[in-house]
Amino acid sequence: MGITLLSFIIVLGVLIFFHEFGHFVIARLFGVGVEKFSLGFGPRLIGKKIGRTDYRISAIPLGGYVKMIGEEPDAEVSRSDIPISFTHKHVIKRMCIVAAGPFFNILLAVIIFFGIFWVSGAMILKPSVGAVRDGSPALVAGIKAGDLITAIDGAAVSNWEDMTKIIGASNGKTLEIKVRRADSDKVFRITPELVPAKNLFGEDVQRFIIGISASGDVYTRDLNLFQALTESLKQTYTIIELMVVIIGKLITGDISADTIGGPIMIAKMAGDQAKAGIGNLIFFIALISVNLAIINLVPIPILDGGHLLFFFIEAIRGRPVNLKIREVAQQIGLFIILLLVVLVFYNDIFRYKDNILRFLKGIF
Image 1 (cartoon, helix red, strand yellow):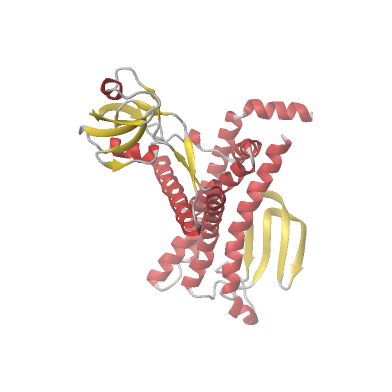
Image 2: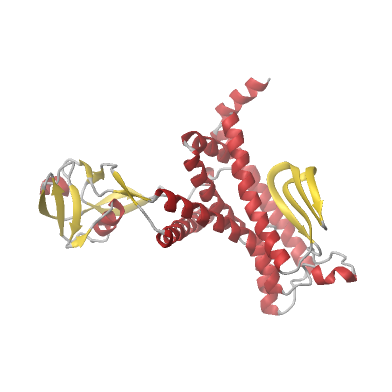
């Protein structure tokens, strides 16, 4: 439990700091005054005031905030503070300040992935056959466990992912597959078969396969600075794309809301990753950082995405959205967020009820 709690604090602290630091840094860049920079909500625990900004750690560690001068449209701002008021800045500058939080979370992921790829290189899953399914096209053709696939239709294959993409895109066309067996090369003509399968989201799909599974053998490919940066951007983009698809499927109901997790799930996963090693925990931070960025960009009032939507409308219309409309939208947004909070806590408690009960018994 100690490792889980400590890991949760580290993960949440890093994510919140980068998010709020993004808002803070761009606000200061555009000359906006900042009254408070807080990690956590609620009562101030410790902190230090430097200039006009109170840097603090607050009691409830489930978020954070940057309070800027003139942040609310109806806030009273003295004449002397107008030059550093958020509301009095150009709408494009306000959009940049709001978008900076999610952007810095994505930047954090890129930095982490860059460090991993540069130090450790890229782990590549070999296109090596671990098992051949009975009655499969591969077995009929003569493929055996231990074969290393080196080319398909004359195109070199260096990893398992590329191999499966080529087979999946074959549309059932017969493929010429070259393999290395012991010290010799062999060529087989195999026609992939279309079979029912499950995709990443548990949906029923049809997929062309030849009936082999990976051996699990991997090799490391060293990367230079440019290659490490390129791979880190690719990795981050892949996670962003996956998150957008997941959110879309949650909205349409294609994915059950029961799969959504909250703080308890994050704490459990953070603890598991910490036990597996510091590298796993760092990778987990990058993954959750991208998730946080994308969720914050959902156009729900209260979230950064909601503020960006209002500013976008203002930029098009040339004047701010009516204050009354914004207030009603904020109330609706707060209601949606509260419903989501209840849902994720319900899912967490139901998912980890046995762990929670053991923890409570240990306390009492």
